Length: 503
Image (cartoon, rainbow, N blue to C red):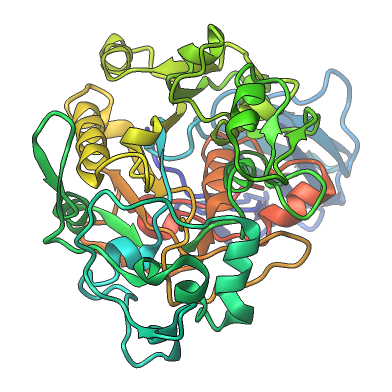
């Protein structure tokens, strides 16, 4: 896709010249004589995508008639006025102002029509891994903002009164840690980040590095070095936060709608999901709830309205369809919370074989989320880390081997920190339930910066903002959702292409 530079408007006056956004020069051309009119013509905005409109505004003096080509009105144009245009291709408009003695002046304005998507990224794949903090996976990665023994939070006192500090984790199939809103808030400790050991146990202070190698269920070995290698080849974010200081569905709801509805804790099962009843029965959390369907707009709704193809792929979603509910976690599926998208054709089962076929067939949606099953997501308590790393590596290699690789960006993120120690206090955003502790994010793409670490602040809403910008969806019209979007940074620093936030 061609890369475009955006500008606000082009204005051309009677004399002199105007250098446009592309570097070209246009001039107005009056005829000689004392009665020559003056004229100006402005296009706002000067950059569109197909289907959008611009306003042409002109002013003249000493003119008795005005014409614009291409024609913008079926009748006579006023001496000064405006008209709405919606060109399908880049168009140069020429205004001619003629005076009573026949002298004339011209002014021009060009409306540039770009294409969707606005960047070379025609396919975005967001892979949602589970429950790892930045310090847990990348705390010793070179140059990153990782573990720091000089910080007060590096040495913590556990519930037994012992002082502990981060050490290399030898257990590569660790048990699950506390990761509720209450435990996150306690470990955060008003920004001191010093209650992990007390709240989640000594193990929560431990970390993995490039020597950590696990064994997958097929007997093959896969280690954290695979993740580090992708970071060295492409781009890594070390200032990316969970949007919610809570467990799911908080972060995935923020990523898809910039909102978690009402309340102060987003945890709850989706009422419209066939596996919700079974999941709630198994849940040891006595405060677990079933959330009523959400009715506000999500980004899937925006894409459907704008004919942008999209799919949420969820491993073992076929067991939701047949109500057997095997290794499927309903609260990790955000679109099951909304009346407009629950159980729709946009929510599909994932298998690696079917995914490979979709890529090779040329029918890959523009925007794809992929949620692996627990044993493939690196979620503590579900499987050895080698299993998730093998699955992820297979997925990325499948994309890289496909015909869509050159126009694809793969964002790999971990949905929450999972109770593992992270030393950076997350900023707290007004009228939200976050931010939460940092999570690792990799951007793997031919359009990604290489061997690059971004230190710019981002969170899950940053992914939403990129989708809305790249496919020209705009921000949500709801003031609360739009306000939340404006609190987040963009993914742009990870990319080598022109990039912006949604308008």
